[in-house]
Image (cartoon, rainbow, N blue to C red; front, side, top):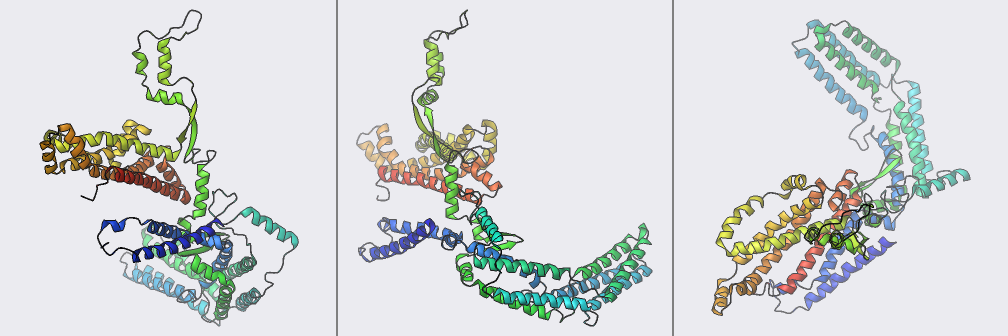
Length: 637
């Protein structure tokens, strides 16, 4: 129901915003010419159109729309898939979906192999002439076994009767399949068992979502149409199994193949180790003879009636699908539901593109502290005593510089605290105050790592970049060092940094610092060196000091470059962080995606992609707001 409402809202949003946008275009001022940056502002309605279109494509190609509007369609298509699976083995023998009879293909293929092997025997210089004659005789006998299978006069009567019996079964099934009362009503006890089994199998969805007892595709038929196709599939399976047990082995063929096998066996047993090539070639002849023996080869017109009955049933079952065929065509793009034995699965975009509804259920499940991912929620909070925060901020050496000695235990085995020990308790956070909620979880860990690496890179990179942009010595001294490590991909540094600094937060934050540090230096240096000389001369003429010139001229001029560098650094930091958490980590978005990849948990993978995108967007939107507030003159000079 929720997905249906969302789908309708998306359609209304797209249509409404497009109409609103068209109305705005008509009311635009004449002087708003092409190329004017002002025309690109205020396009919230187009953002809604773009976002809605992406969500609509996701709903459509993940088959979530099909699931919302036709929840039983997957179960019915599963039963259709069972029929097609049973039919496929029979169709395989006829020129229905293939170009020719399977018998024709086998004969053609094996004749080609026989001629190729005969040529190899004739041209082999390592075989004696008497062995060549013997091997060629075996090949000729093998070739002669084929007409014994394709001759209509030699086929046994019981084989013809069996083929006719199977043909009649398919014809009767076709007639029954079109009846309203097919399949016959089962006993009340059997029907109750089926209903209980349906309740246990759950609904259509991804396994492991917040919905219990959920499977990918429910296989037990849940509708009348599904029951009809399920019953037909079972009958077809029996017919197919009976047909493939049938062999056109008449007495003459049995005698010929037995004599051939005995002759080859006797010939090979009489060869010594010096005639391995001849023995191997005789074995190859035997392999061809066995392939012909095991193939379902019949005379050319023997299976014509069976072919007609299969085609007739196939047409009838397609007709009986009714509107389900339209649902399959229009609401299951790039694939369908397929059957393999008793199981059914999604085949196509719905398999690797999780449904938004399933993804949302999984996301809610991962948010729960009791479940999470590897017992850690994606984002939650924990109550932490303020003393721990104070202990983290205050360095322990504060207590060491306090005059006096730390307390020593007395003769009665007690330790009395003094002022120095009390200061140490404060510095280490070993005291109780009140508790406050602190964020925790995989998302928070990744967010904090990116934020710390970025902030440290800005704090150290911007001053150094400005210094390099203003000072000849600084540029000459630091430029080779920066340019030496900047072009190296972050992933190349990751194994070294993680092995030296460990797999905890220190190594990851330092790696992110290296990424943002070089970007911020380049951005600040470009901004400082790009300051117009006329502005600096004007500042000097007005009596400004060096600090004032830096504060009111150079730094404001550098801000656009610096903030652009921050935006670039954010993207680089997120990409690097995920790679670092892939390599080594027990928490974080990259760690979650890495584990989910190993177990093919597509919903979790898409959740991590969405979370990373949203966090990156949050950073970027925040920075855009900062840019609008701090440098409103940007692009207007």
